[in-house]
Length: 221
Image (cartoon, rainbow, N blue to C red; front, side, top):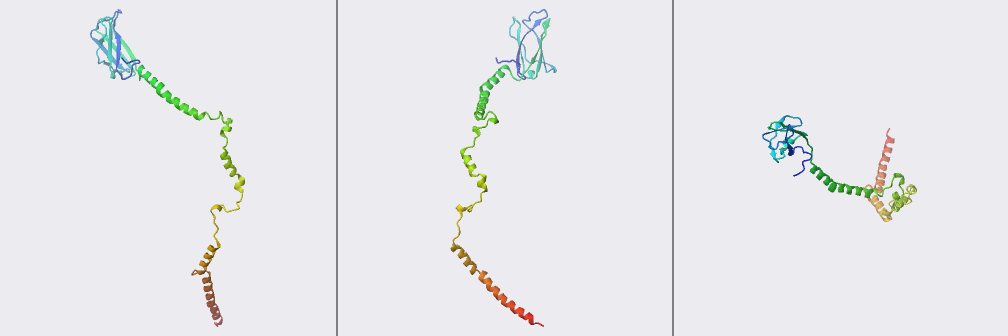
């Protein structure tokens, strides 16, 4: 039989009890039994199941309290036989979310599954932090600049940055045009429709016309 300790809320519970007379003697063979339940101090109702006589010599009896009758935090029970002088049996069951077996299973799961997982995470963190200095003041060779960084730093020193370059910055990709290329460009300009030679000729022709206009203006009375 699975553990029923402590009684679990909303889960059937088997109660074992004995009924006594008011003179202290055991009622070994109960007759008609009255069974009542109250959930969390609520209305009193009949218990559905029948009482089972486990032993007719010592008066051991059992009664199954159904899941619905256990659906509360405090389950009050009342049991009485119709035998003359019977003292009512009363008790209160305080329920929990888990039985002892379930609590044990949860603890075992924590021990066997969760703790190893946590241990692995902690070890991984430790592996990352083992090489850290004990305190910020202890930073030393652990944080030293690498030789590669030192070389780059030296190449980019302030004196180098401030130095005025004596050659084009893109000298590696720069090629000066040769004289033949420049001559070709000059020839193209000279032969253009409105090149320098054409403009000079047009200017001379214009001047010849304007000179005549000046003479005409002078002779007008």
